[in-house]
Length: 225
Image 1: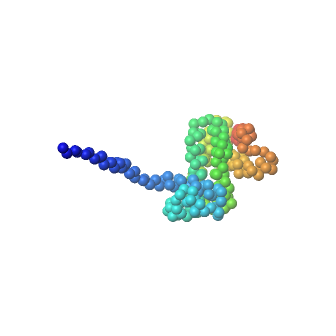
Image 2: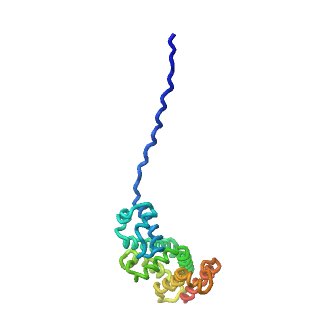
Image 3: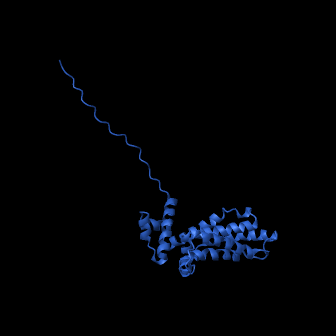
């Protein structure tokens, strides 16, 4: 009698999962480069910033950065455009035109104080650009166009306020914009020297709330009919 020996079945090769195609996302790549460039320019200034350091942070090459931005200086210009664009775009969502004039001013003042307080990088980059006498802002038509929007918005609020007898007539939107930003910017740009000289912590929430009320009262007092 012949015995039949059954051999074990050969193991089946695992079914390969379909390979996911890598999708290039230029906008995400640009955004990543810009975010790391902000860090580098804030820490090192324009002169000391290195494209190599930015490339290392996002695991890419200098060649890739130059592909998207052309040069370190152009990257710096686009960092300026991004930071100014962020504050102007957020302002546009405050719906100031839907508020009563006095409430619109109060909301704008509070937003500006909070934005500068939370976005120290914006304050530092603007300070760096002032060291360069606005050389790179001059190269950007986008920055000028972006910042005209807040003057248009302020002008409309002041016009409505004057028509309702709440604000003085003849107020210049640029002057009011400067009044608001001078206080809000200074308390961030000079917080370390001011804090050390006068032994005060400007990041303290109680002091911040006091300053918020003070600047709102000051601006509305200046505008009052």
